[in-house]
Image (cartoon, rainbow, N blue to C red; front, side):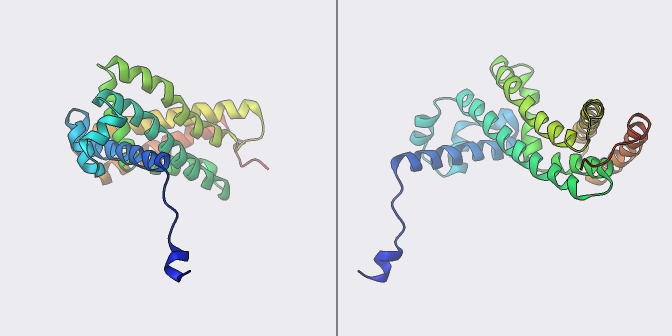
Length: 214
C-alpha cells in the first residue's frame, strides 16, 4: 500500500455532504443579512455566496422564508456560543461588574449582532419570523443571564444581577441601534462607557456585596 493511499482521507457520506451544504447556506444567509439587509437577502444571492447551485439550495430550503427561519436558529446557536465564551472570562477578574459590562459590549459587536438586528426589525411585519424569533431569542439572553448569575452566591443577589444584566443589554442595544443612523463606532463606545458608569453606580447601590462566587 502506498503512502498516498494511507493518507487519503475517508470519503464523506451523503449525510455529511448534506449537512455541510446546509451549514454553508445558513452561514451565507447570515453574511447576506449583514451585507444586504433582510430585504436584499435573496435565495440566488445566498446560493452564490455559499458556492452551491440553485438546485441544491432549493433542495434544502424551498423558499426565502424557509431559509431565513432556519438561519434564525443557526444564528441563535452561534450567538449563544459566543455569549458563553465571552461571559466565561468574567470569572477570571476581581471586578465582575466592569468585566460584565465589557463582555456585553464585545458580545454586541460584529456580524452576528447586525444579522440579529435585521431579523428583529423584519419580524415586526413578518409574523412567521416573529414566531421563530420569539422561540429562540430567550435562549441567547438566558445564556448571558445564567452565566452572569453564577457569579454571586445567593439567589436574592442572582435576581438583582439578572435585572442588572437585562438593563445593561437594553441600554447597549438602544445605543447601537441609534448608531446605525450615522455610524460612528468611537462615539457609540463613548456613549456606552458613559452609560456603564451610571450602571455601575446603580449596581453598587443595589448590590453592594456583588462579588465572584467561591
